[in-house]
Length: 291
Image (tube, rainbow, N blue to C red; front, side, top):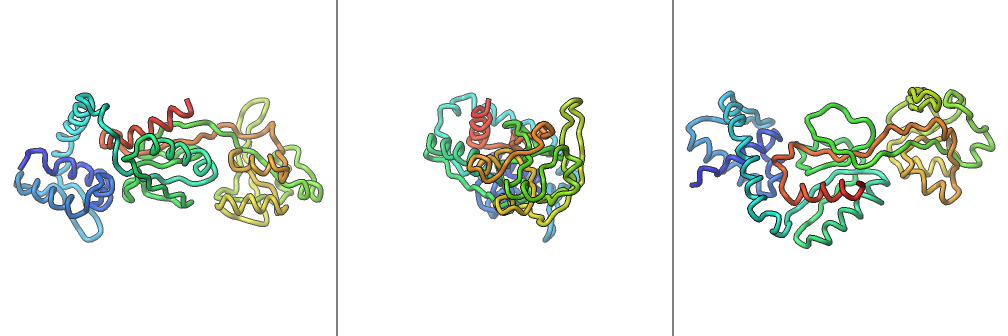
């Protein structure tokens, strides 16, 4: 048995906290991961992981061992890549979490272009609008929008996107057109996850926060767009979401001098040194497409 057997599996389980998530990350079976780690523990004569029916955690010895082997994993991956890995065909599955029109109309075509250029690549694209645990659920990377929360994930900016405030012509005819963000207090606003909408003062660039309410609350973008089209109220959403309505004449942009231009689309992923080469190449492809 090779001295390296089980080390990478152990490292990924330690990072994800799950044998299942580690297996998904490494594109192997859960039983393979379990066997490799059990064999590693037997060779070392220690318990590296404390297992229960609901969780996996490092033992004290396991934490010490992880600290010593992590840099070896990085060095080995770098060595493999430098000695001809760049010339080998990219292969493997890429599991991605994303949501919204930007993901569907921009991100997905770029990933399809990447897969078309590398026939041994397969894609698992989850476009459900839900909060996920990227590591525990075994995703390779995800698309995020807006101001990112602090986390252990690595984030790389794809592109900046402004927010746009829109309403249908019928709604504005019946209810009037707000001239400043404060005027929204007297309007029906289509609220997603946040009752406070942030604008920017066009003279000072300072944030202007306005609390809003309205006839409909939804975090589903197509439903929100339909609400705008039918005159249910005013929406405030990334320009990529609402531009089709504007282009078709089904909505008008309002409050444009006050739009928040501080938001961005991000690619987020776990520690890069554990990332398979084909996943790293896909992320680099997306980043380069916007640069």
